Image (tube, rainbow, N blue to C red; front, top):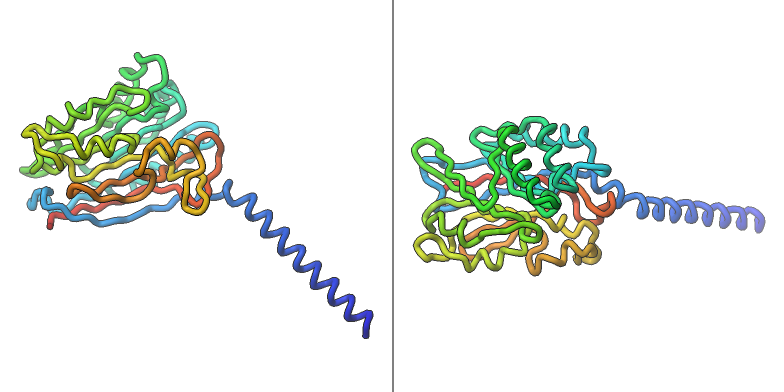
Amino acid sequence: MGYRGRHKARSRYRVIFILLCCVAALMVAYPFLEPFLLETESVTLTSADLPANIGQLKIVYVSDIHQGAFFSEGRVRNLVTRINSLNPDIILLGGDYANTSEEAIDFFRKAPSFHARYLTAAVVGNHDRTAPESNLEALTQAMYDAGIVPLVNTVSRLKIGTDYIYLAGIDDVDNGWPDLEGVAAQVAREDYVIFLSHSPAILSKALEARDRNGNKSWFDLALCGHTHGGQVTLLGQPILESARTSGRYWRGWYEANRAYMLVSNGVGTSVAPVRLFAQPQIHLITVRHGN
């Protein structure tokens, strides 16, 4: 009887040891798995500035693809297919399409076509604005050739039916020459304005900027990326330095001055092909007219 008891104890310890090994292996492997767990976040917002005749808009926002060694062209094709399957009215791209300006140009020359009902538009990120400066012109031309409107210190007025909405985008905060005041001065508070900046570091200044009539609250929806939601987080705090460069705005949704502001986790990775508690995401945003 004693021998059988010792045998059962050894078996139990062996099972516990195997389970602990499995848990340890999963903990090591999971950060390499999470970059492939792409989610679609769906939210519905209301805005009194959205013209009543438009009713609602279906917007898909995607940022930080980082095509390259960690994000293949095949994954880009699958991503674009997934975006198009959402049947968006507008597709908005938030920058960092690859890891250098040359690679970003190549991204738009080779990427599958984005299909939106009205418009696809894009801002540039810090990785898209690496030297030489002359690559910016080649990059925006590659966007135009791909049927995408570049938003680099510009405002695009989009007519929908008999009404208009406005897409305002600035150059990258870190490596470019953003003209926030010049962009804000092209719209009015009563317009429906979507503001795009790759980095959320400028959001505090954007909230203080003024429209062409000297009023604050010049945008209704701000869309940013850059931080990757921390990419690697622990206890709800970002670990990678890129997430710390943006001050209080580093992940998720915020509200201020009657505007909604999103800082996306993005899609790809940089530095290393890992994520931890910062799941990659694309965003399906439905905006409806209302208070």
